[in-house]
Length: 220
Image (cartoon, rainbow, N blue to C red; front, side, top):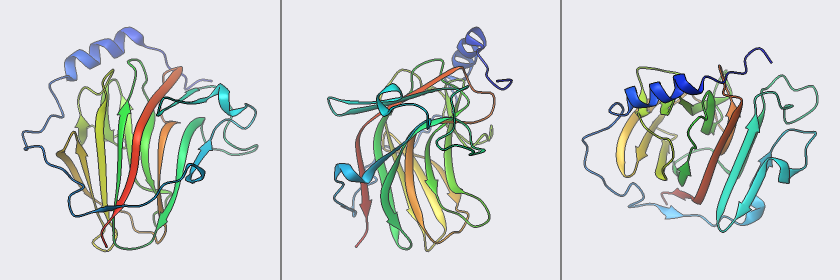
């Protein structure tokens, strides 16, 4: 595919150049204080993967870690879909109002780029109200160079918390307990979380992310 991209040396340069960016001096806290965890049984974790492949060729769940990977020339998740390749979990915990929170520990191997690793689905006039993309080792709001959430995300476990206040139309993103981003939502009436790898623009040939201890919280 023309949009497959494999600039390994360039990626290494970008990671080194950006490692000091996207860090916050805010004190770490526990974003889940005041929230209650909901029960997540395994049947709530729905895999979306290339339609022509069995799950085990793009997904692994071992020792509590969910590993998802995809190639930029893979098929979409259903025949005829115009969407790009993905291997990601749809977390079937739908909400329409109130304050909700996603929490998970993520890991993105070096070289993975041009990919969404987490999203809040549901919006007005578009599909998502939030997406977190990885480009050259940086975790950012969509592909917005001005809103880098973390400047050096590669090869380390990070704690991600995303708080969605539906009624206020606001989302707040925390990395390792530090607030890194606060943005307005994009409307919509039905939301849920997705995480894994979903191809975006200028992707690397191979994309992967790993996740453990995924939870969903709400305020009663």
